[in-house]
Length: 64
Ligand SMILES: [Zn+2]
Image (cartoon, rainbow, N blue to C red):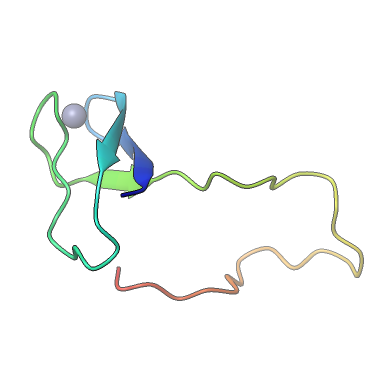
C-alpha cells in the first residue's frame, strides 16, 4: 500500500496515511479530524517547464 502525505488546511499539520489504491474514502486529519486536507504532490514542481507560463491548468484529474 502506498503512503500518501497530506496537509491539513485547518491545523496546518502534515501527516502521512497508508491508503489502498482503490480506497476512495475521505481522508481525515489525524490531528483535528477535519476533512479539509490536501494531498501533497510528491513530485518535482519547480524549474523545469519549457513553453511558458501555464499556471492553473492541471494535467491530471482526480476524484477530488
Ligand atoms: Zn487538522
